[in-house]
Image 1 (spheres, rainbow, N blue to C red):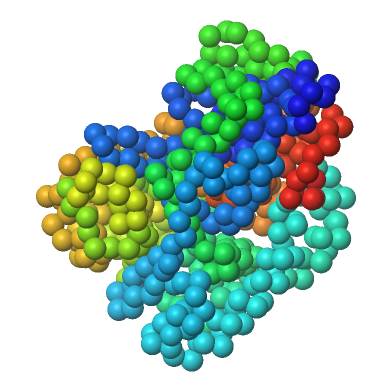
Image 2 (cartoon, rainbow, N blue to C red; image 1 turned 30 degrees about the vertical axis):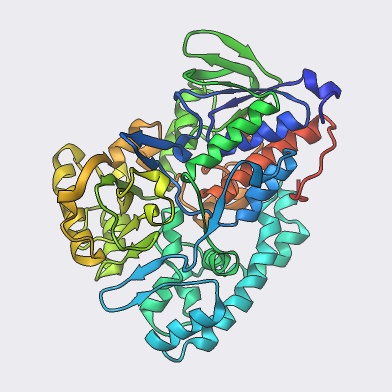
Length: 507
């Protein structure tokens, strides 16, 4: 709250990604002096945009789930989201394309049940049971996701003890969905969401069955102008509240006095003092490059490299001179989906039989491309950089494989001839953007890397230092990244005795 003594407290945020921007605008609204350093010429990080000759592409996230968290964050910053963003709920949410079955899941129960009756008869009751049981799991788990886990006491809290029996420890998401549905393709229709975490549905912890529930209960939204507009709006709110956003200003490393973080040292040698520092860089990169050598023990470079990471992604950003008759979101499953998953996570090779995702957002949002044209976003899960794939050699052939699959399996006939702009990202590209191993979804969400066992928002190894983003608790994905920023802001506010109203009541 502006005007209190905390206005003399200076908070430095390293990185203007969604977690850093969330923390910055909340702290500024509570009266802190906030400076954000961002090495890029724009805010957003992976939640930013690429502009190319009238075509606009989101770099990373394209699904807005759990929109209520974003609404709350704006409200806690003293703003109404409607004054900054136009969000459109998508119905159906997306198309799921198998070789012989097509589903278009929707939050409208009767329409969803009719599709199940048509394609997977006998599973109507299973859907209702899924919604009932997973609603309970979500309600019990959600408070656990909002905690900061600074101590074992929080891990063993009443909320966690209540949630433990429903965490399905030792089971995978695919296994849990077998409690509701009897056909593998239907199970996959409710487990592909594990890819949002960069994980296999056969390895992803069963507790994440709440992800498809969240979609079916609350829906999926598009932000007009692209999801990158969220970062633009957050930066605008921050500016209105007094945040000093310094673009094109890379941070060299943290400025340390023993374990205490005194601020940051910029690439040009300037030292900027801070009472508290919030790190919004990729976790692995930050531990290895932003902390002076020899300081960290638990998260030493060697230990960081030994942790488990998500898969990576091969990306095509295509500006087309036509608009295909395809839904906003389409997920196309490999014929041998299990084999494709093994190629990505176990064998770490490129599959001939690929799964891929196409966002054809121009059918909803004409502003993303010139009139009569479209901006198409294509994502193919692939192994991360630990696989040792030579992308300089494989890039062109794999790109052609993806385009051929789009023609044959997504109905995008003659697509190559309609490309007017093309940008390709490989795992090597992501790694060059300071992302450890090019693991697009950061640390894997295994049981050993969740909740109390994930890097904590109040960083364990350094004082006056906080972590936000996909590599810390609660995890990757926009809603949980916003939550990480909110947790960090709440921790800092409480440290200085600043009263605030927050929907996150756990911190």
